[in-house]
Image 1 (spheres, rainbow, N blue to C red):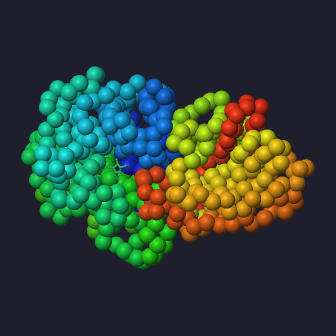
Image 2 (image 1 turned 120 degrees about the horizontal axis):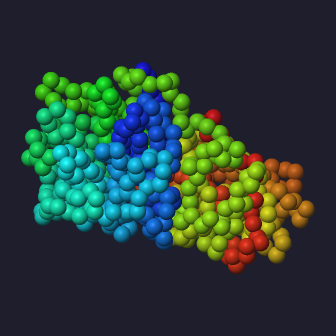
Image 3 (image 1 turned 90 degrees about the vertical axis):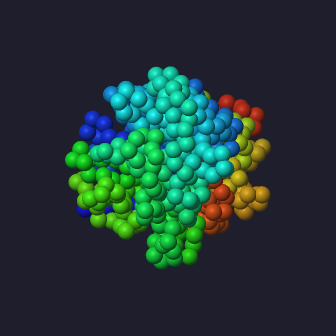
Length: 505
Ligand code: 6LW
């Protein structure tokens, strides 16, 4: 069938996938956002819906005051003897840990830490043994994959951490996953860095520790040689293999959509792509279309008609049913969010969007370039509004500020060290409600606000200043409703109603 990539759209990087009980489960990295590690379910690998998160309690992951793009890095999900395991790194503290759940819809365990350094940890189970691998540096300073056996009940290392593969020579060897297919063990990894040179490589050997022989045609999957009009999908890498019950093999991986030909910027984050895998008679595999990933691909897969996941309307009514999609910055402070029948009331604290902390922020990922958002804001919060947020240093805010009972409509851009108020308009004292509106395409956000009866265009900003190429980091744009309340006066609330965000219009 023909599928449309990405299969999960918006900021959901570093996918890992497993199969259990006739379904597929996928996890992605989440960095400073809480809850951590979004968890998806699928019947067919093509249509995915989010069912929750793996890290839902502060006791499982400490994200307090971590910089953006710190925190939860690439996770791996595996299913073994009736139990799901999710292993990841809190990069800010350089700690690898896993949590487990017997019921995929239930809560995950407290973290179990493993004393092996590196990022992108992964697990492989065989014959009563649990192998743990992550990336690291060899004694010569070059990247390599380390592996040890652990006691899966306690996380204790049972063997020394051994160097098992040094990759094919690309920089930033990461994302190792070990598999057994037939008589061979396959070690797959990413190289090149999660940028335009990103790629997936692999090697195979006769034992879980190798020695591993690299695939002669590495990289097995990359879009690094496709420029300009050849593909707007770039940065393909960091993948995981999965077999269906018939033994067909597929790969999920990350990639990103650049804005257009010759506009090598991406602001929607790294997203999830699907590619087919084909085996040759010697037991090596190829992936994708001649080793590349395209937006539209014919894949030999038996799936329901694809629902393009990013194309949905976000409304409060819809989000009541899909509340797993909301996210917060670093911490969830329950007292900050009061859901009502028609929307949400936010009680701000003293933190602003510029702080490396936990402002009142209710976010949802932007999943398409073309979007149209409208929301009505009322209440007496000192500052409240919506933000298109990449990091504490890069965000565009459209807000109502209330000072001495005088409300003003404010458009403010934060682009690194440049912080500017682009427009400030006093609102009539009789105006209780303000409609805020943002229209985006691949290149621009345009901001509108209501003053009296009039809806005014306040300004526009390029999307590229919220891209990883400009701002750095590993995240993508999240739209947040937020409030700031310097005196932390609990009576000063911001009420958001009538949210409508059409994506993929
Ligand atoms: C992740 C690494 C990577 O840990 O980016 O794309 C890092 N690959 O494997 C952060 O997502």
